[in-house]
Image (cartoon, rainbow, N blue to C red; front, side):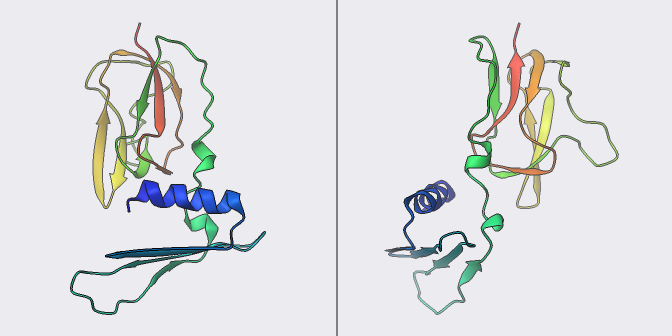
Length: 160
């Protein structure tokens, strides 16, 4: 089960009002427990092929789980010519190469194909996200140093 499926399951459990959901597969086990108006408990266990008991990983605060709906309603002026650059990976979004350096791009800036737009940190690796098109930055949709999901919109570019 990948992270996207887990996030969709969490979202479903939150909306449905169900108090507990358990899923067990050959090498994977997840339990999601919720209580009305309280924090949510999520327990995930990986069961290796050569089974040996392992401690359970527990997330006890709902704030520790990425808020799926927080970024799901991004409003951009719809324009057929605008291009939306999306995150290719899950990680932490950075607008600057380091805290003391200027941002890679700003709203209104003209960029070229191959220009670095941002950096996304995933598992201590910093991945430069380059523009696949030339154009003008219309909007930056993610906050600096915030977590981003796979396929989450990051930039709106006007290619004209």
